[in-house]
Image (cartoon, rainbow, N blue to C red; front, side, top):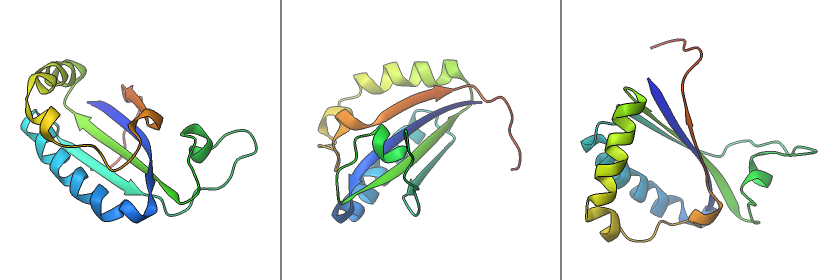
Length: 117
């Protein structure tokens, strides 16, 4: 199992646009072997003294935080898909995302422990 995760600041008024963009993206990633995607819209994010989700992405007033993760079978599958997806012309024709992509955080992870499912 290999996990990619993003923290994304999204203007609150763009919830519907984000949901449509996420649905389109999920279908695209599934074609390339992604096993599962979770898109989670901010419900409660406490303000930290030093850092927190909002500070991490320089969230502006009126923006909500989206936490998303993708589960891939392994790192090799993800890396191969990344290369193929960037050659797919649909990547360029998908349109601009409904958020500022320069402030998102991306990370890739190898699980240490899983529980459930």
